[in-house]
Image (cartoon, rainbow, N blue to C red; front, side, top):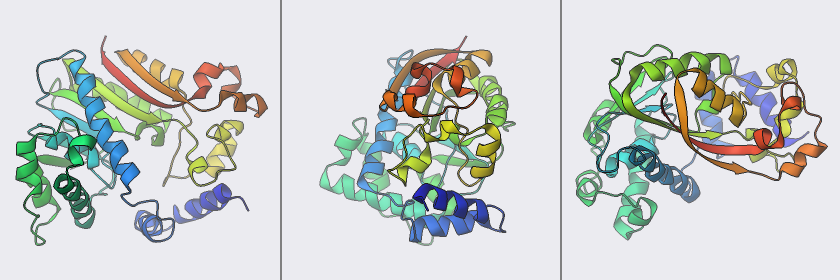
Length: 308
């Protein structure tokens, strides 16, 4: 059995069980070893911090955003912590599920502290504010602290709620960011989230989104390409995918249209592609049959938006 089929089968089965997210977390940590902080993961996520700030500085060269919202906290809030080490006073992060755990926050702290001590953090995080670094990384957090206390120490607010209807004031956010989150949200839900982002973003605000459009099963099975999932009909893909690792399969042109139809202009795109000649050998299904290689080929994008 192919590795991707086995993983999809296991995830599908787990997704119908009680406490399926806890079970999936345990498997990721202890069996698949995918939910671990590795050097490449830390380097990648901290690089997002510089790029998010560069997105803000496209229109606001001499200031820092005073109100920042991350969509999709996930298990490891590396990007929020990196941004707070870069000089932000506070940051809010939102997720529909309560993923944050004390042991994971302490694990991030340990890695950042190690990099701070050996001097590599300045390379990984060029915008590092040394004063913030001293305040947050020189003294270890108290082991008695709970999640709320740990986040408060960093200036981070954690909201567990649906991003389609947030308890955030209209026109109150300077910068909205996401990090490999949008691809896991079904398109019909994204179509409700993006207008809500427009509501809360200030007229002069910026959005900065990292979107991974590759077939995520290609990360565990090298025999399939990042375009592999484009071969399935919507019905077939509905049988395969699951709510533990949903993949909406949207392409870059669909995200672009989603933003534009919701009242945003795309200021800038930084796109990456794999070997697009692979697409010539795939039996593409609707709606991908009618898309160009340029649309289909993008596997990763940093999309920066502002109000129209």
